[in-house]
Each structure stands twice: as structure tokens, then as C-alpha cells.
Amino acid sequence: MAHSHSKYADFEELRTQAVALRRAGLSRRQIRDRLHVDNNDILNRLLQGEPPPEWTKRPNAKDDLRDKARELRLQGWTYDRIQVELGCSKSSISLWVRDLPKPERRDPSEQAKLAARKRWEHELAVRDAQRQRTKAAAAREIGELSRRELFIAGVALYWAEGTKDKPHARRERVAFVNSDPDMIRLFLAWLDLLEVDREQIAYRLMIHESADADAARTYWAGVVGADLDAFGKTTLKRHNPQTVRKNTGDDYRGCLVVTVRRSAELYRRIEGWWYGIVGAAPAADLSNRT
Image (cartoon, rainbow, N blue to C red):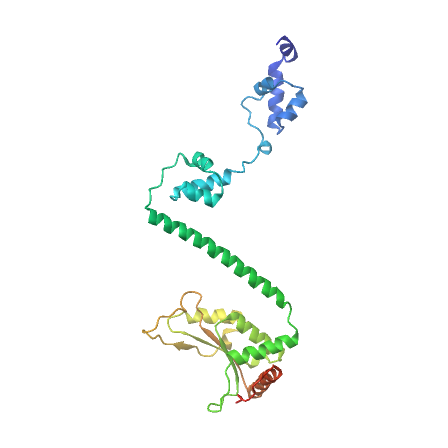
């Protein structure tokens, strides 16, 4: 002890230096090496009351788990459920939540329902993730469309969704009706490919009478990139009280009717293109022509 007293006789001066170094952000080891203090007890006395700098603090990997465990416990979860959810031991959970009130005991049937619901929620999440991966992979398979690919896709799209001429009702004009904005965009891109002037195109909204028609027109004008004065008179659908409508809410914007003026010749070409596709397919039946 005599050696220690002789080496650190001016303790207060040494402490002043140690505190200054600590407040400058140095670690214990850096201070020890800087001041040549080899005795941990004396180093502790020199730094007594001085907190370590933030950079020397090691993050506790279980902090997030502890916070989540407490949150679940406050929601009434049992140790078993928290263990399954977080993957940590019951002993750790017990230490983390022991100061919290115990949840009310539920009857076994209710516990079973909660467990089943949790399993089902997990299963739905897994299915949804798989669904999104499949869709994303399929989208990548398409890549960029060539002009011919867009041309054929547009012909098929029109013949599936556009108005068609019938022997009993001659309607040789190009008109496309849809509620899907992506279908509308694809149809317009196809018309651009066919070099149809946008000035030849007219728009009309068809929507249920209880919906916000003005907001829907503004929405569709943004989709097609047109002014509101390009829209004709809105067609309002009357409500049948005996039916239960599912197309309601803020996302309901009715259907958009896209019509090409003076388009009888274009319609005939579209019909010809369609039957050209049908004729080029194997085992085609060309008897169903208008």
C-alpha cells in the first residue's frame, strides 16, 4: 500500500485529469493508459460519479424483445403465447413482466379460439407473401412489350371488353368501358400505337347516383390525361333497393366509357384483326362471325 500512496500521492490532481479525460469521451482503458493507472480500484475512485460516454455503451440485444414482451403482456397474453411469438425463454419473460398485473384467466375454449386465430393470421401472412412473390416473378417474365405484342394485346383486350357489332344491332364504332384504370391506360396506349388522334376520343362517366360523380370525373381525367371538358354527360345508375351493392366506398369511381369518334372503319379493322388472330390459332372455328 505504501507503493500505491507514493505513486498516486497527488490523488486530487490525478482525479481532475481523469475526470477531464472522461468528459472528453475517453474510455476507461484509454484513461488508464494515458495516466498510467494500473490499479482498477484506484481507477474506479478516480472516475467515481462520472458516467461512461455513449459510444462505450453496448446495446442490449434484448431491449426490443423486453419491450415487445411487456406490450403483449399488457394485452393479456400468457407466457406461452409470448414465448411462441418472440422465441425467447419463459424465465426471461418472467423477469421482464413480473411487475405488470396478471391477465385475467380465460376459459379453455376462448384460449383455443385465440390460438387458432393466431395460427390463421400467420397462415394468411405466409399465403399473402407467396402470392406477392408469384405476381412479382410473373411481372418480370413479361419484360418490355414490342409494338407487335402491344398491338395483339390491344386487339384481344378490345374484343374482350369493347362494344361489338351484332347482326341484330349494328354498332360499328369503337367504344371501351371499364372500371379498371390500368385497363383504360392500356387501351389508350393501344390507340396511340394505332395513331388515333386524342382529339377523336371522347370520355363519359357511368356511376351510381349515390356516389361523388364530380370527384370521379376528376379522378378519371387524371388517369387519361384529359381536361374535364373532354367528358360528356355523366350517366347515373339508379339504385335497386333489392340488391346489395359491393362497389361502394371511397375507391368506387364508376366506369369510364372511352369512345373514338367516326370509328366505323377502325372497328371493322379491329374485327378483322381479331379473326386473323383466331384463324392463326390451332383448331380455330371461324364460323362465329358477325
